[in-house]
Image (cartoon, rainbow, N blue to C red; front, side):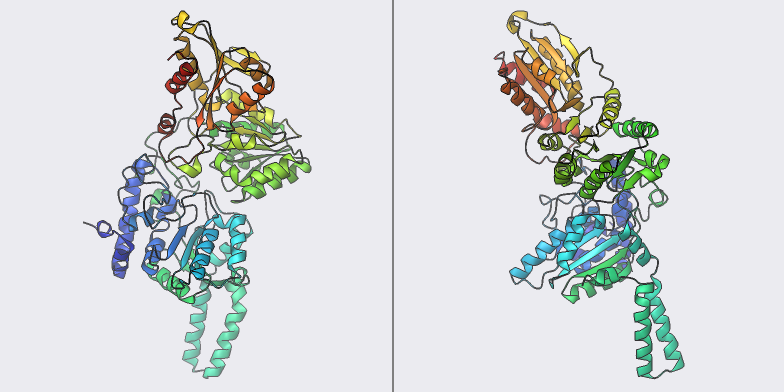
Length: 630
């Protein structure tokens, strides 16, 4: 039995000796590598915060002291130290979430895995403690240097600096988020990281004075002057202290004793303090330590000895975008790429390698990315802003008021659109179509395969007077779904004569519309309905917003319309199609298959679709019910 097996709560962590904390840290690293290699998950971030998290739970009494993890992908160690050690179904249905989860533990606070929010949460908790007179409680925010690039973090810092509430901010500085941290803040933190000789230099001065026997007052004045002169040269923490926030550090985040000492000082201060911890992402796991592309930030199943994937990934949607945007860039010198700290995950690394002066990583700042893109469009460029679909939610106002209002030619490419599944509620890219449908002039494409994705990208960058959006799902590509007919921009991918009991179908016709990744489900639904004696047309339009007029017309030529979409069904493409048809006096009934307005628990994509009744069998049953054939 190791030490980890005896940890059921933070109280157990506080009872350990210093030597035992070192042994526990090593045991936790072995556990993470073995378990996460089997399930997949965020490996690198957690290997980097082992000692830091141990120190947090030795100094602060969670849950009375509230610990908030920004983004939350570094919370596996926290889970282990709060009694959750069954990682066998991590990020799978019924197992532990890959992020903090209130349903799992009273020690978890913030479930939203969107970055740069922890300081605002902790500020709010500290305010609540103050108002209730609970002055012995401390709010703690653990935020990475990457998340500090987000504007919301600086809004919070501005407010925190003006307070005297008990709040400790731990900056977990490893120089990376998904990619190396960029910008002025990154440069400042780098200076702090590389000038850690400040305290050692002062200690050398003290020893030198002691050896020379200098008089006490002279020694005091000499050291005071030395410290003042070196402060902004050797340890330029002034950016934080000038805000009015006490700064402690830099501290070796892999030294439990040093971290405990710094955190106890911060806790005792009784007002906002920043503790700057230097850590190494992937610490203690050689494949992660030697990786420069940050492949171990999040992994699938890997061989723990080598870090290599158990099953090589199939060529995916992101790879197609990566290839096509480079081809577009070669033809179009005005096309530039913008991303928010996700150069590699969204597939822009090849574009950046070929066109470094035309690639802009703005850090975790989606709002800035959108409005900066509007400015670039005004200046004669065509920006392509590539982000995960769920993160565009954060920049809706900028898309609406800075891009669309000004008729700016900006293309937004939304990776991981629709159901992503295992990362849970905040990562499903399910909101974009229902949200963006109300943006005047915006055009949105949901390609169904590689050829339509490439075509949609080329068409999107040709639009210079309005925002365009191209969305695609996470994962491997499907086989191409060719059109059998094209009707004014709408692809018909199948037409089925009735093949079953024709009398049962009574010659009725059904239009099945598959949006994006659900085109394959639409095809299977069409075949099943034909087997019930119905004539079926299956359409898979690439451009779905605004709703194509040809699709509205087609709906009027059928007795039932079934729309399948990988997004929120209320206000989605199907709802918009029904609305447009109704405005033209078309009374064809509609069946909408899609996601509910709600937050979905983590599970595989297929499990989520089945649970939400979005399979071909479900769509077929709903259509037959609507036609009174069941």
